[in-house]
Length: 162
Image (cartoon, rainbow, N blue to C red; front, side):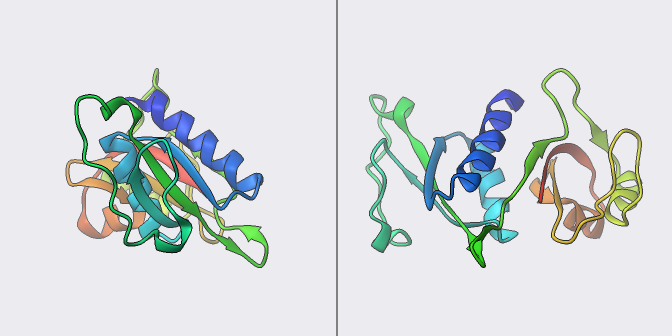
């Protein structure tokens, strides 16, 4: 799991939402795919589509069938992400990494429970703003911190989204 690539995706999504882009692409990997699907299920992204270098057509984004993956095109695979806006403001306004490539932060259920309730745990600030989410990589996949507390699982803190 490369946190450097995820950090690049975080800054790319933050810059794309500030630039008011409707559709943007990031490199395709399994970890980035699971994080973007978690962002979509939390309501920060409108669509996540696998594709190549050329963007999929906007009118048929949900039913788009990409070309099959081969050895020749595996390096050029991209994830095309549709960004959401509400009242002309980006839904995803800030996205920062919590764990760094040189310092990974692991949290158990008790620490996650403190963070979800708005209190600080270790080096991590609590979730105090409305709509703020913290994504955690667990052995059951990437989940939001509130879902981790409900399922009683801990893991590595990935990124904080506001």
